[in-house]
Image 1 (cartoon, rainbow, N blue to C red):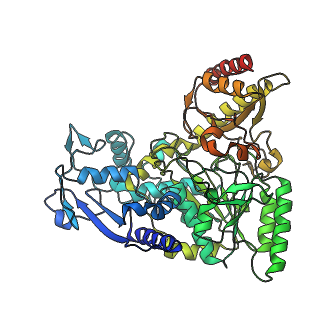
Image 2: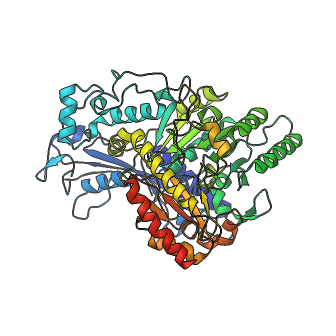
Length: 575
């Protein structure tokens, strides 16, 4: 297994040995460094992690013992990205070579973005954080809107500033300086005191959430965590089961991160007000059992949830967190920070940047799902590359402890070229969000108007109607108190018969795929993809077998409505 740093590789080695020891099995697990350089004249002085070289750290173990190492790679998301892997492959020699500490290899192909007529070209000097007007214009024209790979630090700083909401101007004329020290900044739109230094970039969703849970666990006494609300689940095995707080059986694969890196978790699958009551009773009971010890270490939730778009009552949860001394981690991916502001209620906010923040769906390795710390899963093992941001609330009671931990433990392993693409894609993020929000609300209004008695559509799940009172508590508003945030670009709907659901999905003339947040619309039969082997269990939480989830894009409004009318008519004919 390949990892970007020795620290990560050694984490994997220790985890593998620990998991095997639980079964009384012992075998050698080794870590080795592998360096590759391009065949340049000055290769002896070449930085191994520069654009001309590469460095990977390999964890080696017997192939028949992979089951002990796989969960680390699967759940932490700390492997190398596909772009970085491609870069490494470009440096390998064409002929088979014997393993050695260092291989100097001539690239098999020139970089497809930074070359002319198939020959490798010299890049211009790194911008050193400052790009003049003529230089930035040249870069935009020369690289097709991309900064050179040498400008990764510039791109990452620009990303952190966008996420922190501190850029005073972020239009086309400003893109050459948004990541430089000379860029003019403003107080954060995300809350008092938030700066770019409170934003941390992680290459995958799993790595951000795994790291957040590791950080919280290191700061606080050992205790279980809480997963609040229905989140993405993927069944890998049926050999271990636990029950949720309502007594339903739950396959433990959904909480393997907390089981393997902590004492476990309490699962509240609905996330309703009644669940807050049950949670409060649980916290009080646990506090009485162990006076002086926090009953849980953290609570993790989505806002809104996926796929039922329900919003938890963050105000009540915050009050409980302050009373019982635990941290709150909120995944805001579905709502996104143009529409909602959850940071005042959270200690840590995570968000998937490869969804609508990127929109182009070209900075990831496949499908990814916004998920809570207790369900770090995706449907298959090939889809691990979804950039996440982690924002620390500077007004939170644990802010200083979190910052101290991050100052010593955080490693920037976000690959340079991935950062370049993400910076480019996110430049018009807010404009795209608002267009998608308006399209989605129009589509939902149409669908709901057809969800009448006798119609094929049974229910439309959308924050405009689903636990709206909780959504409104965190909805973005202007200085005058008028809402500026929309309801997001995701919706789900259920049908009165399986035949109607199938007809709707099959007849809907948009792209089909299990991701979300793309600039183009996507539909997926969510439950049969995510819960095919646990349909009965999912149905207990309202996630019916015929549920169709739709991520609305930026297509023309009337065109989109026309497409959905086709699907509605097909569903009604089949009902």
